[in-house]
Length: 241
Image 1 (cartoon, rainbow, N blue to C red):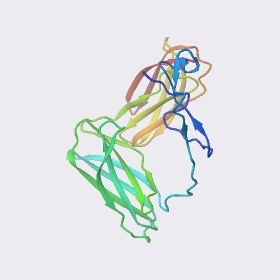
Image 2 (image 1 turned 90 degrees about the horizontal axis):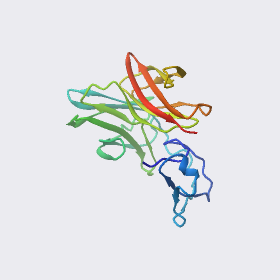
Image 3 (image 1 turned 45 degrees about the horizontal axis):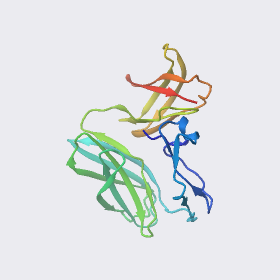
């Protein structure tokens, strides 16, 4: 298994114009800092050229949701006032990683409306898990993505999408929720004692959860538990500092 450096899977970084980057690969998080246990490509170093483009779009995607409509995914998204023409690519994935376009929708072109609501129904039947997102783009080629939602033919209400494991100063996970609501997120030691807890307000779709300030924990096995509307998820995690 490959472990990332001590950065979350999705992060924002303000890069300099001539920043240089490299990739370090190891079999465990601890081995990333051990030169005898990791691999670094000394030749292929990536150079980023940063271009300041300002605000790319004059309108924003403020909502995106979906539901099962007689075995089909019924999607709905909302934008703010549209002062230019847009195209909406509806993208679909079976694993939440590799997406492909299934439709392109034209914007209404109605700049007088405060909000614009769009609807699309996937003609294919839902089978297993299906992930959807919207790519909103203008004529200049600038674009922005909506959040990703998951719909399933099975009645899944709450599920772990991913858990960063082992964890260090932060424990991070992604949770899928079929509906909005508050979840209790708790961390237990092997003796069953709750050592940390927090509340998370979940929206429909995939939510990123972070429990921080965990560097003082002893290395070892812990239990991550999430409870929402009586549905309980549990995952074994390992602390390694």
